[in-house]
Length: 571
Image: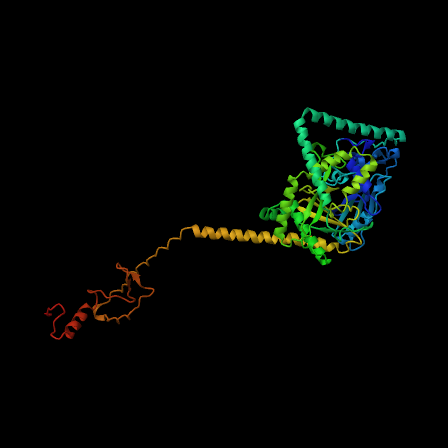
């Protein structure tokens, strides 16, 4: 879809205009932090100017048909000035991230000028560790914040040095502003197009009656679920109070691998884990405010994209709003995650999204006055306590002017009487939370941010403990089923050979002293019978060796009858 001159806003886009007032600003954005050094401001301007042709809507403003005869239209702004929309600022020393987030909150506190294109980009220097930031601010009527394309996406490159464009861009030439008659004609043409779309759907239903009946049944069920949710209002909490125009902003850094690890061990989706950690943090915060949380279940408004694959590069809103549970009364992290998972599974199987889509389609036929009333009901505190939106981002590094994008923190918006909105976005292995709060209602917004970080850390500890228990149980089962190891075979010591003494002359032979008796110790070796056998420790005399004659005479002299032991006399 080309972003043409005189395009009419969709009903959903226009609903964000009807929602806006002096306290509730309907712009969204992001804080993006880049590794330095900061580029010159002129280079930033040139870079943005070179990419505006990819998003013509960023050079268009709103035009209103006379007498509310139709929804507003986008028209080229003949007075477009890029330097009005791209602002240059710097943080005072020391340039901490907290100073940057306070600046983002002040920027978010200022409503966009509807007489000009509805966006701003702030180039911020002076951030510590030789970094800089770009703070984006875009009206929700221009982009949906969940899918599609906006200025930030076309500014980023996939490599530090992007390829040069094949041809130079032609200078932009705005088309003349339409007259009142042309605006009325454009509004009538838009209504006619909507009527034709409705008629074509009716013809399609007539040619396929069974499919039409099924679609009507699902639509009726979906609308019934939404009506039932309205009849069971969200609880009153300190989050739902009248708000002012000023804002606070806090962030939480997380690793995507931590969410995936908890998902693998404990189950659920990344979005289930997000809602469970937010629930735990809000429960702790409410109890610190003296609120009894027993049985208390908050409701989160969860925008869901319904953009088709062939609509990925279109501006405008293609979303439906669903309501998810936040069981702040459950203190056990695993039980809380299990509750959220089961509730979200049931929500996905329900017809709530179908009903929301039907209501969005019906709004296309509504005149502006009816549409304004419907949009206010849609964002009523009876339906939800806070917005929680999760936007998947690219899992690879992005660059602007050769500088790598280090961190990306999203910024949501605050509807009337809603003091907190939480936006989550993943980028390059990180899952970062951006918390936007009313300045007066949430002076302790950092406590909620800390509680989210603590909640994820708690789930990670529980997952590690569970994994360790499973590993220990598997090891024990494996040890019980394995056969016992065979006993080691005994190795016999090698018998030491007897030590021989050198021969000496018979006349010089001396009788060796008898060896002392030995116990079976280190020198014992097994005999043939298995009993230990002692090895002699000294020289051994041979029977026919030196001194044999002398030993024989001694034996005869010791014998009482002078005979040898064998009974023979010596001759």
